[in-house]
Length: 210
Length: 224
Image (cartoon, chains in turn purple, yellow):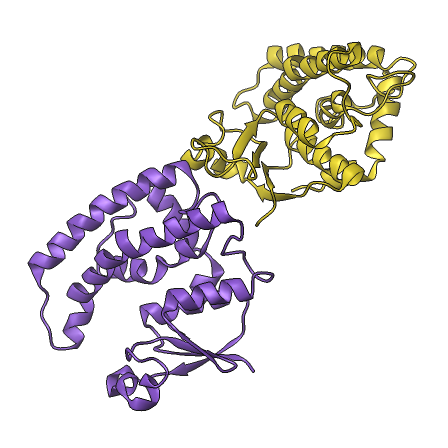
């Protein structure tokens, strides 16, 4: 039975899973969850994803949520097909986890916060907290300065081979650029890396929405 | 991408030296495998900071031994300079000494003599022929003649070295070693260097044909 991806067509976390499915050549069925109608908070949904968030997958009965966990599952299950995105030996795995953790601690809070303040909160009748947005941006700047050092020594975040950790950056990176915050182009190594990961066919296939 | 070795390379003579060496070792022992990363030289990828971190010279080939990381090089131990890479490979993977000679012997010295001859002579001189013939932004007849004549002279040197032999070093008619593989990919491009035929160098011609006929050589020439 083909893997089912439950999500929202343009949701960042849904796209995070979709780009990995494409990169690994895994066929899937996309089932749209209507967030505008609160479908994600309904009991039929929360029975599978108790936090009421998208996405989750149903892989022939296996239910899994948290986009990064789903991505790791897909990369491991389909290790022998598509692009290799997850190392197997202990040292390479350690460097991968270091890079993946970097994304969650030193990137995601700032880009997702900026995305909320400058784009999404308006959808829910909220107003941009300018002070918070300013602080988030300056924090992001500091973090990306470090990214530029790391990416000056190696091609990707975990080493010289691409891994899930690089792809995890795509959805929010794209949104932040879209709202006019470009802290990538001015940093030569970050810029090189960003150009590399955003030009992958797997990302082009999903970035406009599934 | 979990193979213990990764070769950053491009379709050039120095790149082929290493891919051929890897294929010869693979065919002889089956004890190694390698990933290939083709480097786009026209886009100057080899000058990007992440590449310079592996090879400050910013040139291919570079071999990275992923099974051997250090604090300074966590992605694996990088080796640059084609001859150094070949010596690294035979040191690590040629345990029965099929492509090298016992340490401290005359043959080992001879192998090194031919390696340094190629490294300091043939490679750079033929490289300069290519530069002045195909890449220089202005026409420099003096440069073309100087290096073109030198390449012809150097082919004559190898021809002398192959007199009565099948390979440059080794007892009897010799055996295939790093000495031969470090030179062959350059001689292979003799036409490109303005030496239309190798008829004037019969030993060199026979040796080149012999090497190009080998399956691992053919496999190495297909990488990347």
